[in-house]
Amino acid sequence: MSRIDPLPPLREVIDRFDLRAKKALGQNFLLDLNLTARIARAAGDLKGSDILEVGPGPGGLTRGLLAEGARKVLAIEKDARCLPALAEIAAAYPGRLTVLEGDALQIDPLTHLTPPIKICANLPYNVGTELLVRWLTPPQWPPVWSSLTLMFQKEVAQRITARPGSKAYGRLAILAQWRCDARIVLTLPPGAFSPPPKVESAVVHLTALPEPRFEADPTVLERVVAAAFNQRRKMLRASLKGLDPAIGARLERLGIRPTARAEEIDLEAFCRLARDFG
Ligand code: SAM
Image (tube, rainbow, N blue to C red; front, side, top):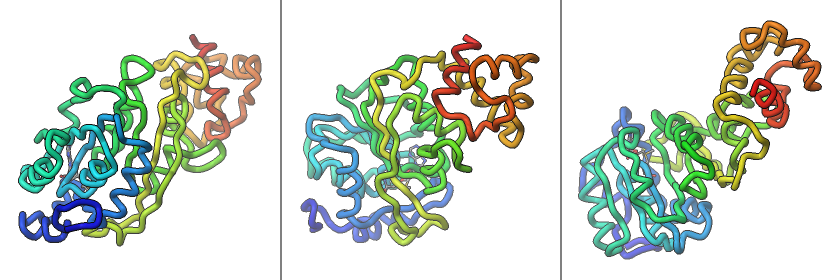
């Protein structure tokens, strides 16, 4: 019995179901249930919310989410070996946990959930960024989810929350911060996981804003930002030349220095530029 629920400790679960971690599935498990409950709390008040969890594995975070009062958890797990362990959790929380076996890149279960919806996951590193980008680019804004609480490699977490002027600032920061508040809420050393990964990890909490911080067409903004950061060492007058041969004059008119580099340009200026390309 653990401190957060009447279920057995995770080490025992892993031994009993022989859940040896597979590197190809990005399996680094969290075994400390106090820690998983803390991550669940970082997602905010869970009572009255449905939660989507990707990659529950042996269920450490799942148990944290349920113990912290989630109305319902829908978990997608690719590794069938984990299903019996997850079934035990479902039995301990009748009617509150549904597990889908499959690839989160192929299944989109958000429509099966009832708002308010929060997404909370210790993501498999190999698909984490791709899932984040999908969640941040839904067909309509605001999205169906109200917040994302996600574990990443610390370096990725820094790229999501980076401010202009830093090395980590780029497309991901702009994509995330244009329509969300994004902050790192917890940093974890490799030793928090079993097996320990090579690098530190961090939990990022993103809250969806009701509308974008600054007006811009998403496709145009993405095109401008991609062009600027694809050649991030170049000055904007060179990196954006492909979008407009007379880019220098356009930038001057918009009050943006043509000799600046992409990492010096804040979100507002990128949106100003995107609106001008309209
Ligand atoms: N949530 C557990 C924890 O915190 O201990 C496990 C986290 S582990 C970093 C990532 C989990 O995602 C593994 O259980 C792995 O099998 C699963 N996974 C990997 N790729 C997946 C995919 N494409 N779709 C769904 N689950 C996936």
